[in-house]
Image 1 (tube, rainbow, N blue to C red):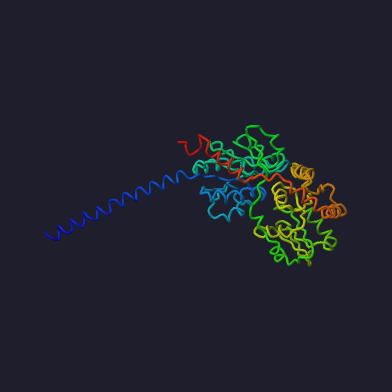
Image 2 (cartoon, rainbow, N blue to C red; image 1 turned 90 degrees about the vertical axis):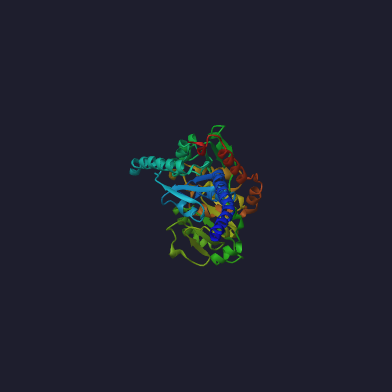
Amino acid sequence: MIADRKKTVETGLFSLISGPQRIIGRQIHLWTERREAMRKKIIFTGGGSAGHVTVNQALIPRFLKDGWDVGYIGSHDGIERQLIQPFGKVKYYGISTGKLRRYFDWNNFNDPFRVLKGIGEAYRILRKEKPDVVFSKGGFVSVPVVIGGWMNGVPVVIHESDLTPGLANRLAIPFATRVCTTFPETTQHLKAEKGVYVGALVREELKRGKADEGRRICGFTADTPVLLIMGGSLGSRNINRMVHRTLPSLLQNFQIAHICGKGNVDPSMERPGYRQFEYLTKELPHMLAMADGVISRAGSNAIFELLALKKPMLLIPLSKSASRGDQVLNARSFKRKGYAEVLEEEELNEKRFLRHLSSLFENKEAYIAKMAEGDGRNTLHTLRRLIEEAACREGQTKNLP
């Protein structure tokens, strides 16, 4: 009997202790669920080339730091998957996509069906994830995502780097909430209520490069100028060939770090003072820091990064015969502002190449002074504010039934 009373007392004490614990536990669980529901979610998209990913690479760490859930929709095996992989907290979704071509190709008959399939896949992903906003950097993979976002009622913010909108963005703009531009002239091609000039967004890590580390990687010395040659993430055969033809002359005045593009390194060209690389990621800030001058294509992201770093540049834009002419317009804009020397690809030969390079270094200080006169706007802050404003718009996906 005494044992029964003791057991009853113990049971009562346990209930007094465990009851509040269970209540507190339930409250913590409910609070955690509410907090998760209140967390903002953003889906990034963009790909096909590194230029369609770099702005996303600059923005993603900021949103992760602010506590946002971050996802990325790209192609199954595009370069964007490789570039986003280092962000361990970002979930990557691969979708079907087709390339948007301006020339005849038998794949033009199949790719529209791949795009339609991609729209369906993007729609289902966004319906499930219920992001507050989609941010698109462009490229053919972004079109299904932007349309899928619009179909789900998700606000879409697009970033256009070039002076005139590319084909993918032209298709996507009607479905977007806002379109942010790098060049002020670009807003002329957009409806007033959509277009907003924000300037260029430069990855912060590029500003933290160390010249000594760049020279260590290349085995260069500090007493000879360094010329960095970049042909874009996919490389440039024309620029590569011109460098190889003029290499003996170039090595008389420079040490050369040459980013050739995947599969374009030529072992037979190796010699002291000349280093070839397929592609650079972590090492790129150090290469830029050590460079006294840069030869580059005229993709918008690349040239604005060179502008931010005040690197004298010789731009050789991709010709109109091989593109829609966006790089030509970008390069001419920089030339008008006194930021760059420009040699158009149709005029490229050994004599002109060496002459323009010589002119670049003769006027090096003038170019640096002009670049220092930039408007200095805080593009990162502006972009984040526009994205956050779009995410707060009424009628967003999380409020859908």
